[in-house]
Image 1 (cartoon, rainbow, N blue to C red):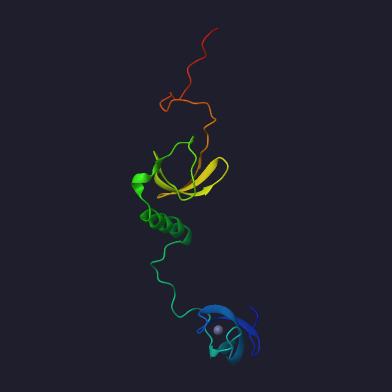
Image 2: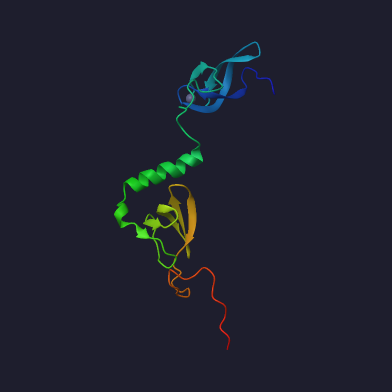
Length: 151
Ligand SMILES: [Zn+2]
């Protein structure tokens, strides 16, 4: 760890900008930085390496929060009775609400050529759509095809 000196630069929390920013060291007490000047706003203040108030502990992991909160919020603005039953043969649009037999209600986030990214309550899934040109099969076809009939 390089020793700090007066006139040198250090990253510190600016009490005015409320951000971690580059500061110029104004005063040292022993080996510790006492006062700094914010390079952004020019304000002098006591050195603080970290914000005085840390973020509220109620915030969950960012990635988890992104999916759950956005899903709940977006679902709140939609008429769930109009959710389209998911079928790989249908074409879907961004922000469309769909009803998937396994995953439940989902919101279409991205539409690609033959795939859609859908946010469900539990997870984000990539599904196929626009498979209308696929061989038509009844929805209740058996999972394994019957053996080929002899000539
Ligand atoms: Zn500042």
